[in-house]
Amino acid sequence: MNNIDIASGIVFQKLEISKDSFDARLISQKKIYLLQSLGTNLGYTYNWYVRGPYSPALTSYIYANLDVLASNDFSDYKLAKRAESNIQCVNNLEKRKRADFTTASWYELLASLLYIYNNKESWKIDDQEHTLFLTLIKNKPQYNEEQCQYAFGILGDEGFAKTGS
Image (tube, rainbow, N blue to C red; front, side, top):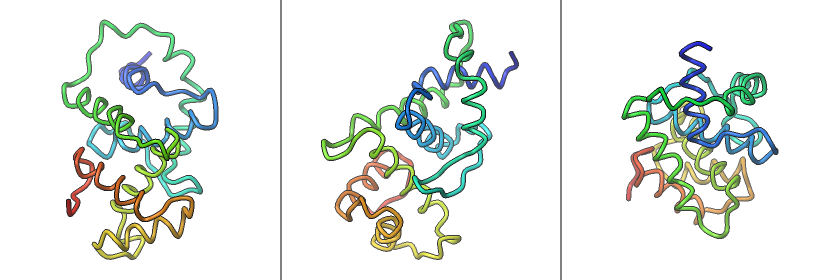
């Protein structure tokens, strides 16, 4: 097992990455996207897909390696303090989830908002939060503007994005 696998194993265990269900796989994709947006880069590139930011390479890696990584004891290894802090930040987002979201829909909304926000130029949108929310709702009509405002506020509070709040 190389250093990248060890680091991934530690991160995956701490983020509770799973492939056991569709929702678990969706949450895994979104958590890794959010983690990488904080600067803990695991090397996965993302593009837009039906359920928001998606990395085919991450899916392949999880299917090929998760069983081995999940069962290993990595207690002799430590991540950098910044990586540990970023993982905690991603995990803490779940504590801010309201009752009108499932865990999967919450992480999907957060990651999707952040993806569009981080890629404003390619989405051809301005810096207005209202435009961001309308763009997301156009692509994901299951969400409304109030939910987007709440989620984007959380992203700002937690340091993922610079918001007006």
